[in-house]
Length: 81
Image (cartoon, rainbow, N blue to C red):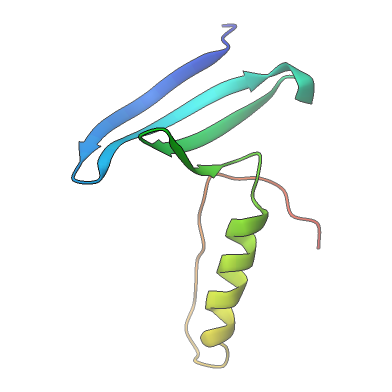
């Protein structure tokens, strides 16, 4: 199935409408992107992950040596190093 854009889910919240979408990005050799929007604002995207990676690192530093097992999830993406 070929598609350019698909809304996977959309829900009304007290802050506004939140949606999970996926879209094809021809400039990235057909890579499929996932994104979460709140109203017209992008909250997270599988294309731009650096901010999420850095926020996770900052939070994990505070928990260093606590003995906790931590799992960080998101929309995906690739990290070098």
